[in-house]
Length: 407
Image (cartoon, rainbow, N blue to C red; front, side):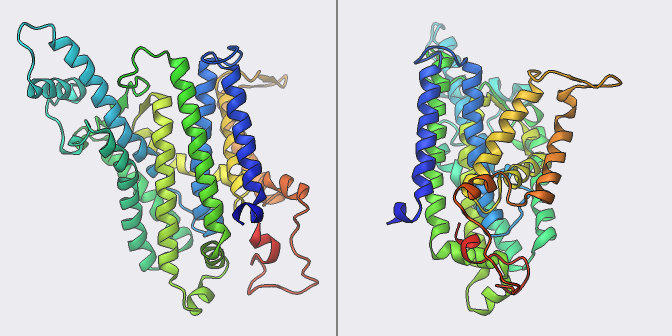
């Protein structure tokens, strides 16, 4: 029944599977080697960014909550898994070194060695309280969801119960992100300050495995997470819950008048979205190899909103399209692969001008294609705004109804 009502889900999963298989066949690990390992990592990270954009579309495109702090949850997911990666890998190195001594090391000596190795760079030799469970993978995986989820729940409960909306809520989300970043920049935060967590690409227990193999494994994991999240998001917005949050987006006051707990619905979608973002971050940073507080810069969350807007908010596939297109173009332009444009009187260096081009694209899409790149797919599906025959179908001119709301 669900698949019959949402055929686009099967199409999306088929395209995602075909893409994953193609990259695998062309990779250095299991195929012809036509796609280098560095490109496989880029594609894996792109899938993670698409997952984050999907989460952003849930909260903004469907619920109308413009969060400009979602990359905080993305980075927190990376920090949580990064703790285990760094602790376990350092533990392997320390254990191998101390085993050469005449007297075998005690667990306390190994723990002290790990602490000194990790935190010596910030002038400390003690393991912070925040690293209490760093040696346990199951606990850290649980914290990947729990820490961002609790932060989103507490922030959302305080904001939504106070009925903070619109631009004020967006400013508050940015303030939350900036405050978290400033705290992480401090050396005594327990997360190595500006140095962040590094060496995350070295997976404990897999030191003998080549990076070409590990990059493919993470590509598979990222594709699986994106596929599962897409199915879950489609199920969520395809039922009563989705209808209510779209109604809240269009006319919050009327939904509240009808007796629905607006705050509960907004808090639920905000928290779920944050947890999906955290999973994306937990898969992204082992592929990137490093995470530091700069990843929480407010501009990163703005980029996330731009991706969703360019792809087409209120469309799950639109968010994915926007993230993939912009991410790959960004890698191409900023990686020095795009040829400079010689205008005669001036040479455009795309490394410097890429952000200008991105900003211009956002303005043009907002003005001339408010439904984003997904409007191309909508046109192929013959999905059009309803013919209003001169009459409004909602309480305001911008209210979405009929096929617009069902898509």
